[in-house]
Image 1 (spheres, rainbow, N blue to C red):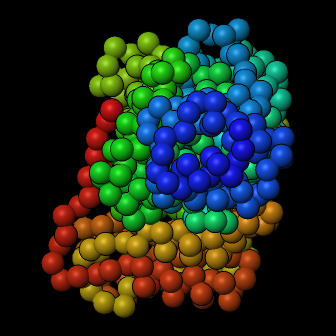
Image 2: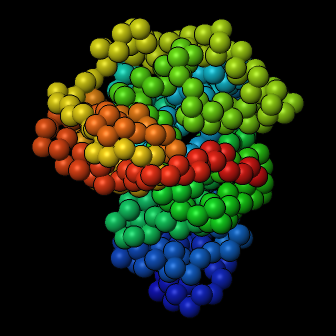
Image 3: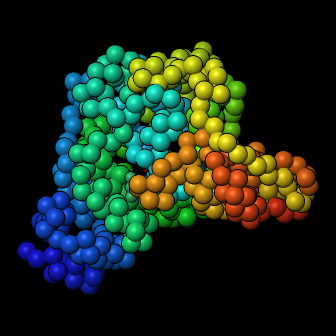
Length: 433
Ligand code: URA
């Protein structure tokens, strides 16, 4: 077999066999092909697509390229959640402790953020002392002790994905449904999870801009899960506006804690509860999503989710006092308030631009090697459909650089569209599969 023939085959819109896909991934891992050949293949796959069978084969090849973990000594059912990437999406910090507080084992491997979409591992790094670099043995012991561990993906998990993702990131081949589906599901399959709830983001701040694309991606992943014996549910949720009010690592930790304290409702709360309810169904703790939602609500009201977060932080070396004293979290040295320049209704939000503005403040990274400013970010108080008075404060920017605050402010002002008439509010939970 020869990589050039395979690139030509995909370039000419032909189907690749399982052996050919395995050959491609093995060659990526053993470095017997050059990065430009891998990139050419990724571009051919991105443009010409892969069918369901090819996508499943690619997923398994990537999952098998590193270590595969077995979590059955924790429990027969270990359920995970995963988001396809959004802005102000800190659902994991809310959902995971709430679900774990019901005795359900949660072992979640998370990635770091890249581009405008944040990563749970970065958010946890904002908690002083919190160690996300657990070995799988440490994580398993922790789950046996307290039902929850949140860790960074180990280097060996779906090894080929790291190589592919870093090339996709610089070759314009991230936004491909089969490549996203195989990247996400390979990591879930390799991590040993028996069930996964996928949050497929749809809208201006997501890789999938339209419902049709989000649906196709959701179905691809659900089918991959089915063939791999991983019970998979996909929820399509709106990314027409940032999910929460806070964007940035320490800021998002604060918002998650406020929700667990019962002080905040809204879209971030709703989606966290819904994803958690699906996790309870997959874990066979709840008969249906409504019952699961009720269970989580009771845990939240009783403060059990917050207590579980406290326990998690302490177990992983973090300072749990941050829960009662946010001044212990990293704080940016500069801030700049944003005031409305006209009256009217918030009609639409260029969510990707808001995400880019947050990266500019230092809250995210453009390259894998970039350092993050954990206290940086943006807060926005208005949602689509809200009425805004001219001169009213609508948000604030935090950064270690005042110049970056000013640049971000301009981007944000251009990303918020105000009109005289009230728009329809976007539906948060668009579909489920
Ligand atoms: N998240 C991933 O893990 N992989 C992708 O390709 C996109 C989002």
